[in-house]
Image 1 (tube, rainbow, N blue to C red):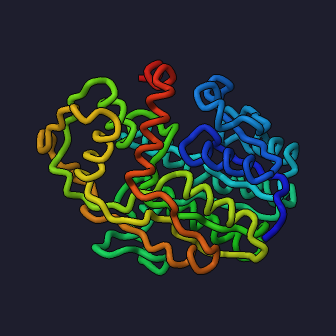
Image 2 (spheres, rainbow, N blue to C red; image 1 turned 30 degrees about the horizontal axis):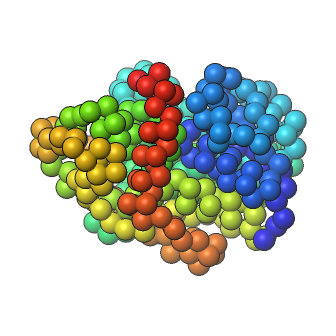
Length: 318
């Protein structure tokens, strides 16, 4: 492993970026973290403590990104900047374009600054649906605009992997959850609804996932950043157990407020939701000696603790 050096985390206010900043700082890296607006950093200040925080308002501003990279002089850059296009039409296309274009913009800046290694955060949603755990040999066949834009970003990264740029690796996480996740996503929605008195309305909850605690993902990314060998291609990161959505909700409610009413079947299934979405992290286990340390109960318990302790922050965003 390489000794900790200088790292730059682009998109540090998101779920993955904020956890990775915390991990890098704890591991002894000299960390620079980019945020879109200074006010964004306030509700996750504890995660960014110890890092140098810089503002990068426009993720597609090539000159702005180049200036941040040049100033940070990083050995490793991790691009966590992303948007999930949940709408249709022009707004969704704009978000999708950002997920694709930002990869090229970041890699161009890293080429110019002679960065040693770049990690691009992709997604398990790049793969075609399967009833079995997906490894890196799985067919690419996204079924959502988000997955399609992440797959397109991976294609761009693969071009740079062929000798144009520094060492480039794509990390593909599956079903990540944890503290500081934005409201409106599944896990924070369930937890904050329970902490607020409920009720919780949901589908039958038969979808199967292998939920991955974000600190375990951050640990894997930190090992990838410090690895002393070039690791081209993609590396999957998935959770240790298979659970249904109903099991996830039940565990979260039990940890947050057991008396909360859960109305199972009160909502229709999302027609675009995959019934099974599982990853195979065998490559990460072999190359990085990585395994997730948190089962769902322990990860959810820590996530609930964070939302309970930071209720003023998330209530202000509700």
